[in-house]
Amino acid sequence: MMASDIEQLLKKRRSVRKFKSTLVPKADVARILQCSRLAPSGANLQPGNFHALSGLALENLKSTLLEAAAEKRPFVSQYSYFPSPMPADLKAKQRTAGHALYSALGIDRRDITGRRNQFDQNYRFFDAPVGIVVTIHKDMGKGCFMDLGMALMALFLVAEASGYATTGIGALANYGDLVHSSLGLSDDELVVCGIALGQADKSEPVNQFRTERDALTSFTSFEGFED
Ligand SMILES: Cc1cc2nc3c(=O)[nH]c(=O)nc-3n(C[C@H](O)[C@H](O)[C@H](O)COP(=O)(O)O)c2cc1C
Image 1 (cartoon, protein in one colour):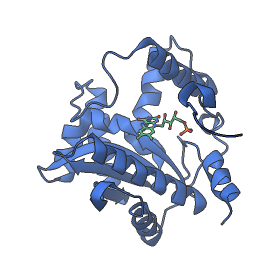
Image 2 (tube, rainbow, N blue to C red):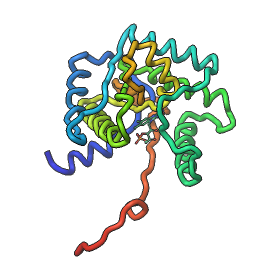
Image 3 (cartoon, rainbow, N blue to C red):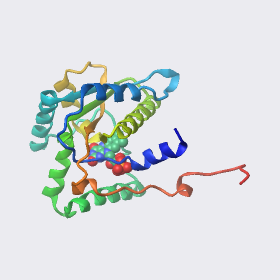
Image 4 (cartoon, protein in one colour):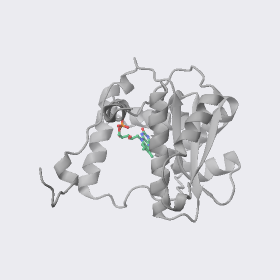
């Protein structure tokens, strides 16, 4: 494998928000999850559990979440994802990402119903044939969340290299308590996020945009190098 291969893979991966209904064989999901465990972790603790759902099991969870969303049930997240309040520079990034998504879909920023309907797609796992609920032991520290993030990245990349698409679904944690009870998770587990996995429906407008990244100089510093 060349360095450029992994670079190409990183550049090719993107979050997909509309999937084909084509089923993913359990063996593929298992292989991708086993590969995600190859990620390094502090003290090799390998934090995190992955609950893979398909078919009726996934439909049941989706129904529970969509019902909650329809009732406008208050969010009960089991951990904080973003800083609160969000500083202005981060808010601007969030707005840019949201704008890219909604303009790809032709949804006006003032169209509250359109935006809400799109947001509910999170709870549909974007129609992916596989939904994965990611949990971590509730006592884990920030370092372990970092380790889990590396496992997620490994999962995204192996899935991509295997011809599948993914998206992370942090929105799932909005109803972490419901996901917890619906799946009968252990009391020790905290719901971190969801993952949608399947084959990308490339023709869908929602899959037509790309997000941008910060310029190197904005997030790095170099000292002591010789050119
Ligand atoms: C852990 C995690 C949670 C995410 N949660 C959501 C989500 O709830 N809804 C959504 O539409 N996208 C979600 N995303 C996708 C991000 O918006 C996306 O990664 C980011 O905008 C960069 O775009 P890209 O993945 O296409 O490169 C999530 C991504 C990650 C890694």
